[in-house]
Length: 270
Length: 270
Image (tube, rainbow over all chains, first blue to last red; front, side):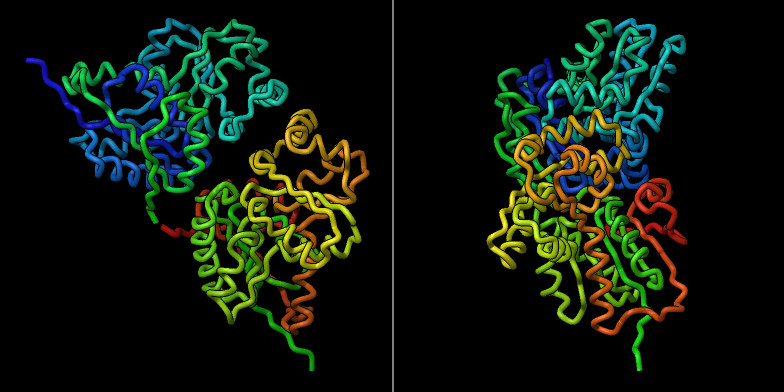
């Protein structure tokens, strides 16, 4: 007998960026209900201290669990990079998946021999992607570059090539001269720039998207552990934010395409 | 007999930007002790809701008062724009000055007949500068423009003309074609771009800096109310942050020039 679990998947992020993971997951697993939490009162996490990020992440996970989710996905690269071990330690009987592990697996599966990882300052400083990749294959050449301006650009929806190229030049001009096999988008906001980055590198660099990878490996996890939803499940999509629910609705369109949430509610941690 | 008050001036901001006010104040009033609070765990305020900003500002003021300051300066334009009335209402026996009032006075004193105000989204949405200017002189033409990318650029210390011009073009290209008499920098981060903005407008627009204006009017307030420090006072300069004290020390140099704080301590609100 095939087993099913119709409880929702919990996805949380510091703000809107994790919606790229929610969107990828809902495309990949249309039968799964999703509860999303964006900590928009304290966004961004990427420039904050490890202690603060761990504290925020614990509050986020507590809320997710209170929603009765079957697994929690830390869609925030910053959280996955610096707080996942602490979360796994403190919730030993819960499943908490992080985008870093998925990104690492996608890099290994791609067969790239040299890779550049881009992300927030906290993600890059944590060295989590390089450590993960080298734990699997220490022959892969890994270069890690923090690109802190890309998150505000994505949050503002700036896509004008002039400004994107000027910002890419700040962080990536060296890489452009000597391109790696692949570029890992180590921040959930960055898929919005996938096309622009592809143009910037003249199509010579394979772009690996950690949001897409996360959806793929979450699907595998549900299947392997026999906790996928029933195929005829009619799944809800609820969103919670810690600030500005109406602005969330507006901006979510950019991240989600047509798959808007059923409802957006405000919650508070302080 | 001349009266003096050697207690410190309290200055608070969402993050580092208010240090431009602290720097201007210490240049203007070298005998005054200063206690600075930057809420770096929740920076930026400018894209958050009015309710959250008021809540954060109350916690900031409570901390300032616990430091025994003689007046509190809300160096954050966002707080001054949306939370100052609430703060004045809840602390009727305390003096809380905001940068908006100073900016408005500087505009009036400048004699400009047309003015553009730039600031964060929350500051501009509040319409506080336009209302303040029109309360004093409703003949002044006021245009208000939110420039949300300028704060992250300042926090990152980006000054390359290529990228600044590309970002200015997003928000200010119309203004450049039809320049006003003056441009009010309605955000404490923006003085870092004063020179670049002056070049952008080919020197045709007078740049009014709300940080400098705030220092000037604070000095007048202390003098008028006979609460200035003794001339031979040897003033301390203490800084508190809610996150990342060591990074604060690094970045503070950019905002403060040579006048670094005696100490930086971390405090917590949550």
